Image (cartoon, rainbow, N blue to C red; front, side, top):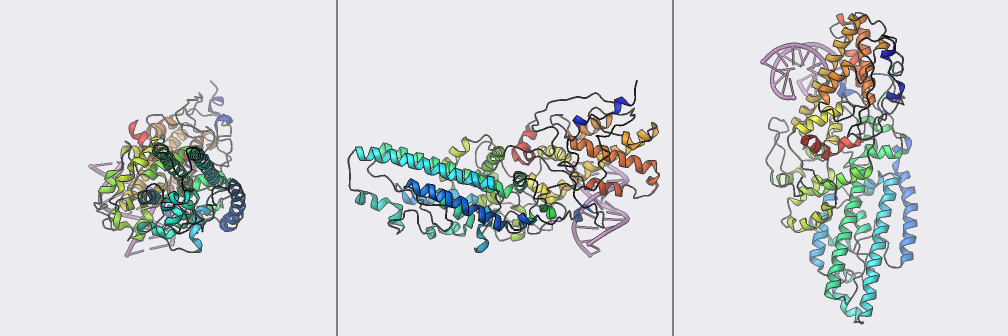
Length: 601
DNA sequence: TCGCACCCTG
DNA sequence: CAGGGTGCGA
């Protein structure tokens, strides 16, 4: 038996990039004075390009806009809906009132909370990366093309069936006339949105104007055709509108993933990544402070990682090797940490959230109806019902952190008596979705716990903001947040106990070189941890966790073997090191449907 | 003084 | 895993 060989940690199984993304370098090793995680600033100076997104956005969007405008104008059919200032003509000529009502409501979910209109109005989209925006424009263009085809076909048919009096026929029904913009059907006065819709954010307005303008209605359609046309258009509008919403929302909801898309250059978003809570929490609602995005971005470095897994242990009686590559349902590049998830998954997820539907495809009635106060023990007192949330900006900012749009939507819907009317439409859209399972809960269920445990593989010290971002289906309040924080505290406790135990074991086994201590997937320590955090073994533990575990083990080993454990607070330096090694969490864990899945399993 | 994380206990 | 006590930094 060769103790040396059995200890080796095959390089191939370790993070291929020890320095990132699992444990990125570049972070100042300087620790902040205290030992409290909440005050770990992790502050990084925002990347300049990020710090001044306006330029980036404006420059890019202008070019895009110009191109799209050209295309659209070339089509001679659709007006240019891209100009944010443009109003929209969304009314259906068929039944203008109803249609308007419906569409207005349909757009509600994507509204952000009322914001002061102003130059910052459009900042929502501003956060979008080129890809997202491109996607957005693509969608818009596709919509226009579709509309064009439909209308052309309809008109041809129309013409073939005999000319009527266009002016007469079209007049009373057309949006343009109803809105007093005779020759510019797209230039509808935005003011025709009243009530709740008046506070549409600029983003929303932009989106609507992009997507929901209505070309002129073909005249003299036979009833069947007209109906078909109407249905078609409705479906198209709904689908595309929702898709656009999802894209936009993705930008808001997922600054992290977005940053991933943009590349790793934007590392500066961590300032609020953990610990310190942005009281505004406003990253999503109030995009301008881009640097306050609750993205943890890169994990800090400045930690002796070089001696991790890639090193060749000389012996290790306790950590024999028998590589085991168990494919799990867990997707993603096994050596990459974090893993990224195809954006469409998340978009769909978001879309389903947007629709505010429960697992059965029904409205989350509990949310709509249950306005009972929660958080009885909270000093925040009871949270207000949805309708009153608006009045509590501080609470709102907290709550909307996770679901800025959906919550607003639901909040509004709860105030709208005729909400049921659009259920069918939304259902139609929802039916196409792979998953439509979000219902916001006030409490935490076993699925949440399970998911939290899996998250522990990536983050040992999650901030409340991170938790909010990764549990979009949880209605966070102080109580819930502290419960979840407590969970992680318990996780850490178990983790550190195991580490200490195995470190002592290794010492008593005569191990002298901490570098020989490498946690592999078949080690006892790993099994203990995996049993605790991943009992069902249905999740492939990321390699980065193994590295963290190895490092932790080594730190404990060093401390113990040098007698530091006589100091009552000897573990604190270790905690400090480990707390800096959180890595990005795969986007898939952010999905609330993942929670549902965990619950089912 | 407050909030947080750790520690201990059940 | 949750509750309560404790210590520590801000």
